[in-house]
Amino acid sequence: MILSKIRPEDMLEYLTLEQRRLECLQKARQSRNEKLLKVLQLAAILAAIVAVVALLKDNPVVLVNILYMLGIVAAIWIWKNPGKK
Image 1 (cartoon, one colour):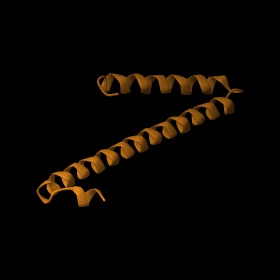
Image 2: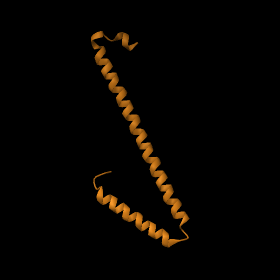
Image 3: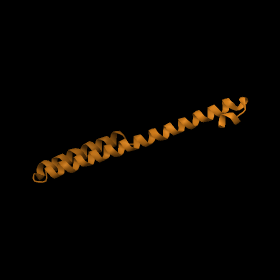
Image 4: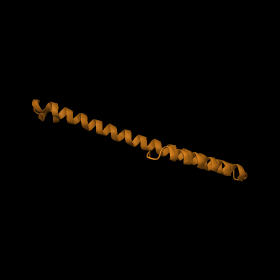
């Protein structure tokens, strides 16, 4: 219906605009999927941390050593990647 009302000389411009609209929709879907994947990864990491702490609550020496190692790894990662988010 829309195409029947467009003049032939404006058809190329309409198709270009339609292509841009479809590209924007694809980028929005991709961005949403990436955010969802990051949330799922964060949830899995947090669940793993909670599971390790729950399993090692009876052995505090091992738990403290693991927490120290995680802190050192996090500090090195932050030191090596200060501008990345």
